[in-house]
Image (cartoon, rainbow, N blue to C red; front, side, top):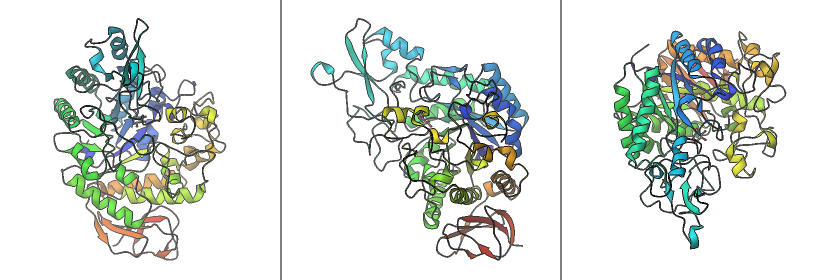
Length: 541
Ligand code: NOJ
């Protein structure tokens, strides 16, 4: 395993509940992942980022943790985790786990103890409790809104039945925010880091890495249109506060006590990228998800601008840039890049939204992937994108589980459409996801047509396109390369990296195809033309 592996790694996100179900309960689990690891080796990834699998009442799909040092029975046991980690390492795949430090579940013993211990107790100081305002404290302490909709405060009732203070929850009311001004919280999380580092994990994806610390005095703030995960022009008083960087410096010191390069990956949804780069200064995290890139439209001018901005911002602090198009919080990119404009993050799409033609979406999605994989740095893939999965729009309201849908009373569809269990075998129950055919979110009709077994070995399939691109990326050292922009006509973006010429036609009209052997093509190219919504990698010699 190479030095600084993370600088160029392809990191594949496994969303455990939707990856592979071994016990037939309709929810994916850790043994399911272990049983499918060879498919990921064949795909050509370097590392897995495993979304939460820790003990949780699952009010936000595991991002509401009730025990940071155990596995939720839904997903298996600690022994299953150890087996997965060992199996991944045997195959040369690193494993990064999701850590959720901004909030716990309201069922975490730390929160239960805080409720039970009563006002003025040290236990209360673990979380953000404040007296309400107005007569009798009946109004929340300030006007903050939950990212998922509705107020960010919930009032408690004390043990003796009297109305008590309010607690802060930037997300669901089942996710109380920790008070990171309390050293007790710092101590606990360093213990959690060590627990997983001792087991051998290769690092942590840090949830809401721009949260944790809140502005002094908790000043009122008007969020843009309800709630937002971040990335707004103005920094909210609960995002990106200076003190948060000290937390990651502390954590970096812990990681550096361990051998092998263990990494911190931040979900720091702050823009512009110059600001995000503060999270990856040399003594903090190793990398952050590039949400500026994820949010860029499929447009030559916008892409060139965001790539330049990324390389300057992250390069300016000595960090690699990362690239990402899809994850479990956003509309899958083949669908999203065809929606102009896409709805704000988290709103999602559903049966009442405008339709996207799947074939055109896939064509554009593959072109965007081929462009991304040609860039230097580290790229993130989200499970199922290698199968060309579109966003599932036709989920019935009764099936939806995202707290966004529930808290906005259905005004926002939320994120379930990108979380539908993935298809493995066309003719198996639940398309190979689960032996019983059960699936926690219903798979749409025809889902099996995207199954891995229908694509494996088929040259034009999306799966083989991903495999070819990942292999060529490795062979030509693109992850460690440097780019040089080439002149290109309108709607076309062209660059050189690692001896290859990469050209994307983001328009709809074919343009002349430069000379060279085609190494990777996101779609059909012929007659010396590069059609619209297509990317090619060419070898000039
Ligand atoms: C970001 C995670 O990616 C998202 O899925 C989750 O709902 C929030 N953080 C809250 O933990």
